[in-house]
View (cartoon, rainbow, N blue to C red):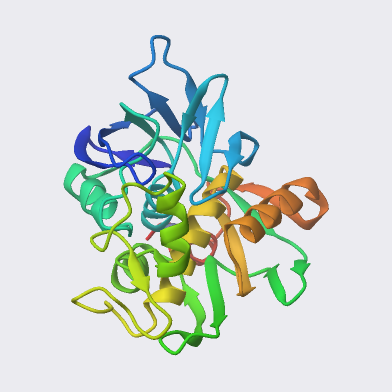
Length: 303
Ligand SMILES: [Zn+2]
């Protein structure tokens, strides 16, 4: 069944771009409404749905927009909602971006857990992959093939002594694996690039409390990494946030080689543009099907 949160809940943090304080409130939302962002600081609030057609920029972070309303840095919140199997929520924010918190999804998972999850009286619809689809860009690639539930394999390869090649193989994405393995992985950046951003007045909220920063040799954060392969784990987190823009949960095995937001988004567009690669299925199980089929078709991604 579709899920929302049981009650509204708020937090405050700073915006990655602006460095300014911003308040975020998650509200329960009705079935089939999806994830919708609302800027409460605008004179006329506009609903901005979390769908790929609303993406206006992927520079630094994913920005969604409609009319004059834009909401930036949505990906780590969306990853938490995908990871925890939340279908419908209204996200109010009183500024142009979702707070960056600690650069991971951990705070958003905490918020959802604190609010509680509410199962709704409507079947969940999922995008089920029927045939493999691959999007390539030089040595970067992303491929999806049919599988039960959502599975992710991811590899990054950075010519940097603290990163190198890191790989996650066949992670079954559910609430438990997301919380244990993925949600605390922070965003990362290289000092050279961060300095350029700062000089251009960008990423003003970015600092060592919300970004893993590397110079040419090592990690600069005093407490180091949360896992030796935190980098590839964060890439999985980013992927899940980008897959949220499909507008519904997807069932398939996604394999990514050296991905990033731009490639993830290209993949989401390519997939939605080619309906012969997937079907939309309701997870409501017909009464005549045996109970075994119910377990097989459904609850894995939302467990
Ligand atoms: Zn990220």
